[in-house]
Length: 481
Ligand code: HEM
Image 1: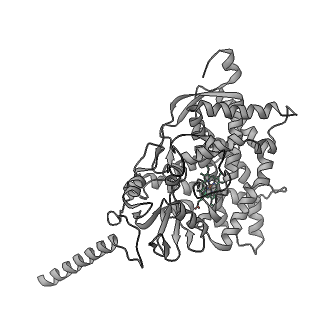
Image 2: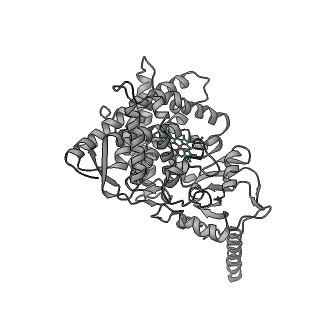
Image 3: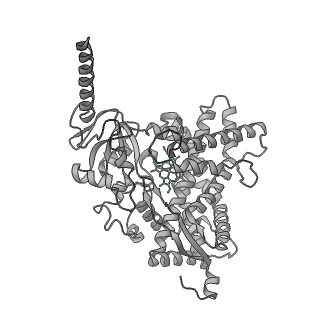
């Protein structure tokens, strides 16, 4: 009897040792990029999520780039991953979407953004959704939206200027959320019995956290927040179906029309997942970018002065003093666009863009095995002194001679290739118009907070509390800020 037990124990030992060996030395038809797979199952996940309180490249990347070079292997949340901090490989990954690589996100992400979210769809369905989003957030829609964006920013600033202090990240997130939710689903927080925004708060708190779904964890709260928000969106869509409107104006109208057509490829589940992603992406990313811009401007008086001059000139040269911002004026904001690019370069709001290799891919003597996940790391490119001189310095002027539209090998804050962010123009309009309203009428002082931490998503753990003062009031009381 005892030798049967011994045999079983030996088999388990051998299998386990073999499994650990395979874990550490994955199969590859070529030369796998160097790196470490870390602990079995856990991999190097804990290092990846370790908080980093600086603007600089995360230590997780820095240490490995130094040791292994710009392309290395690791294991994150149970998956083998090739990490790319190499501008050429990143470019190739973006350009080869659908050929050598395909958009792919870890299960924990798909769980929170929905299995049918736009990032997980491919081919015809993906193109269909992308066109739908471009219709909503493309230049033609934005031109029509410009006055509303200005009026929303002006009203918000006027309200905040009457307060002792305002937490800018949360306040701008609320401002943008209300505008986007109004545009997409005609949601009015004043009139609605359900607080849609609140369910997104829980969602965001756990979004970039360790994906452990047990009560009490941030990730669990995140999933609960998503469930709540999705239920509300579904109720709202059903409500609209029961009470259709004569004049069709928003995204819900559009979706219902498509669903009723019968031959449409759109399903209710896909439409709701898209709605969720758009609401989230629109306010969370842009509010972070605005907060970072205001913080950096506060620390860089020369940039603030040039920005203020650009916007005062717009007002000075305006023929009809009563009119609001025009599209032509918006397009003329050259320094503002430089400043926006510099802000998103430093902010690195998206710390990693994921893909999956569809075939074995050869790159600089290495092989990326088919089926492996690949993580493109924009921070490593944006903060590399080879690409940007003094990369930690906030220097909007560096963009004077650089391409500021689209993506390039060295600029991928909004991704690149076919999956280039569809919200880029929307973000730029929001940021530029907000800054216009801010610098032409107000000044601000930091009250407290403003420290950042990346886990690896960017956060302001203590918020960024500022006191906003109207410029006339300021000169009357002779306050110098
Ligand atoms: C500072 C603001 C923003 C940043 C830094 C940002 C960044 C990015 C990045 C890096 C990607 C590429 C993801 C990939 O290739 O897998 C992306 C895609 C996307 N973004 Fe944004 N984004 C911002 C604002 C927005 C806004 C305002 C919206 C919504 C209106 C939006 C909606 C989307 C969508 C739907 C995709 C998926 C596109 C696709 O898979 O083709 N983003 N964004």
